[in-house]
Figure (cartoon, each protein chain N blue to C red):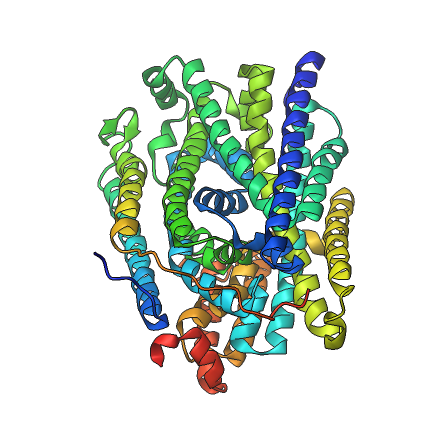
Length: 513
Length: 97
């Protein structure tokens, strides 16, 4: 463990954090209330407002929410920590994410925007239902989504709570309750609009946090030249692209799938393609998103590489303590409060996005489609009922996740290890091929999700249990063969299965007509 | 005066063009990243590398210059390949609540 700061330092730091959390809460609730009024005036219903914010995102908000959603605690604490041990190759690896915002918005953005407007889609499952017209596709995708999302939210909450404990010395339960409650409240009441608005604040805070960290390190080291001279001395491997033979090339290359093209298959990023206002917003978001994500990755991870010049990293129990240690040792408590708001922002923004989608999966994809009867939906009191149900569902999922963090069920812990790769194997082909390949059909989608996820879980857990006999494709991580299996399954079974009907073809591929 | 994109057909042709441009840019970044990174790093050792501001040349080119170039390329591609058009209206009667 690292030494905790004095009581007055801790009090100032926590005060800054509480103020920051309150700002998020107030802004989130206020903007969502305004959006609800606008949507009501335009005749958009509750579902459209609550789950997609009335498709009102501008360029900055779209860019920031995209980044905030896929930038988690690891970019602020775990990643820089590992970079301090592995050197510049870890920055090199993180830079694989530079073109990610471009590829997501460039490929999914406009196609999703048009189709989701035509079909009133507000979730990825809505889109899959319109494209494949298949109950198994809807059920499989909803179940995968809720399960993997709960596991991911749990690990985010846990990461944030432990960070809180490391810095303040107070039990992690307090940290969990503090920001857990705030996230759950603004997501439950405000819905998607509150999520993306707070994401924007949080994205800007992350940029500020990255600047604070690197400036602190370079100043404390006595300037850039003195710092790199010191690095040569204490971590001679920092310039080696293999970190002295410990970072294999095939391992690094695997990240082109996991955090590269695979991200096209993450429902939490893909759904942002349904929520923006117009093409101008999309174009601006592509540019802002690219600039900001590259900046965050470069600055945060290179700060980690520079860290050994100002602290003795070998004396720490874990590389996770590198960033907190720098903060406590060198930052004024107010600055430290602003800085630590950044990883908490990364955590909250990821959790809120997952929470609203998990709620959408249950209310919109399962309840409205399969449980409630059609004739009931036209009753006037149903509108009020559905808004209560939606908020209640969001609240319950949020609370379940918090309880799980206090006492984690082992199955969820296990699922979390594979959540990101699992989601990519389940959704990559159904989303991408469904948009651009006419022959894509339900059989292909179902088999691709099942076989992809099964392969990924099997190979991952086998490799964990059998380090002497790992299954691998040219030394890459399990995600690479698993995605290839899901693609092969999609193509083969789509060719075997029934062709999509004419109505679907006309809707999705009007250029063929 | 630029031609306006109005019909469904034109919109989808344009979307395809933009998707292909996105993929091309992605591949271009990958090649830059790989060649200046692994390619260049493989030609020497930390002892023999050229250093720019304390950073080895392979890193400086692949990550710092690569990032700046990609940002510039993004602006150019969006400006010259991506086109504005109407995304359509929300369908009527599809939503019950």
